[in-house]
Length: 415
Image (cartoon, one colour):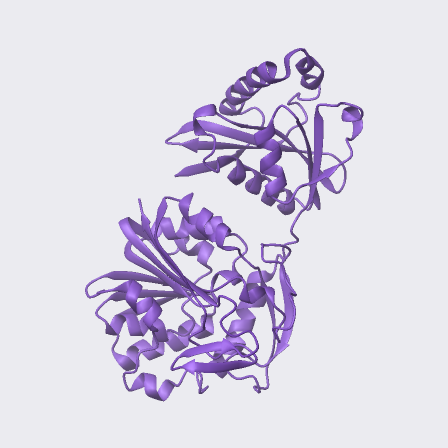
């Protein structure tokens, strides 16, 4: 697993990596390197990130103020033996995150035609070529890029917590969740996740984003010892009451996923999360780090989620309304809820779309191996507009039939 450390330009590990970077550039650029070197002094750089593996520095990057709206990415470097492992991407994403936290709207940078791997990295990650700026104007071997930072809502946690507190009050009495049948022993789990879970008797399971606990308690009914976690304190209150009422071996914690390592000290055989969860999280790398933290060696992640293709469409599935890839946060105010569209309820939510590659890359780069991956052309829930039921607990969008994936499921194992 790689560790990213925020530091300054006086960091000795950073200085050592910069010496290697400059030596590498001298070979690539030859005599022209003297020109580029004059613009790479460290005295104006205040924000540095160093990447480590097993306490060994393996890469670095930095940002420095360019103007009131823009940070300039500088001094990106990965040692040769650690290249092609996604470390450069992780460094770049962390620098972008830092840029946003500091209130800047853009990052920009210059790289050289003799660094094709750097050009590929930037082009694959949303950077647009721009005319060469300042000292790079007219320099044939220079290539310049710019990217608009994702606007983050500093209150997204509070907005979403309030939203799910309101939803919980409606959901507990809805036909969708059918509490009466559940209290009589009916499981809330579906065949997709049950097949992946297998025999869980005696297993310790961490259930992330558990809502008001039906799936958590269903897991406990199968013989597992389960800890459920949810952002909504109202949902956790209801879940705790349900566990007491059913006698389930389940406990619940009200917490943001990212903060969970600060409030829970335990390891688990399985981390489980399902159906409409990751869209509420802006950073899947942090999500995957949390999962890896709580899994025992050889522990499993069981993850079932609505397919990102579904989230590209508008609510009526008439046109593509959203980016398949993560973009700026999607901030919406809606009436009703998926469990009761006629409910007298208005909620605001802040969400993000996440591609399949983003999901898998985040897991792979945080010490997990993908053991299985499947896609499905139906939803087990009637939670979208314009659906038809094709079989028990199988729904499709009527006018799209089986032409789009609606669900995916994966199992990942901690290495």
